[in-house]
Image 1 (cartoon, rainbow, N blue to C red):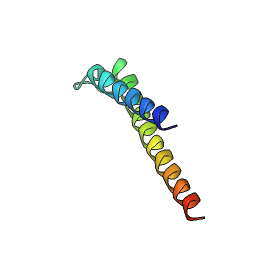
Image 2 (tube, one colour):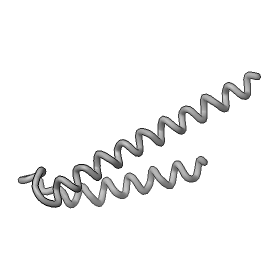
Image 3 (tube, rainbow, N blue to C red):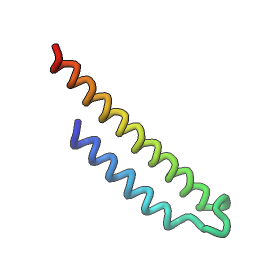
Length: 67
C-alpha cells in the first residue's frame, strides 16, 4: 500500500508539472488552459486524498499496536 501511495503521488505531481506548462497566463480560462487548470486541481485533490489515506492507515496501525 505504501509503494502504491508514493507512486500515485509522484504521478500526480508529474501531472501538475506537465499541466502547469499548458496554462496560458494571459487567458487561463480559455481553450486548453481550462483543461490544464482542472487537471491541476484534480491532481492536488488526489494528493490530499492520498495523504489522508496515509494518515488514517498510520492511525489504524497505532490502534492495533495498543491492543
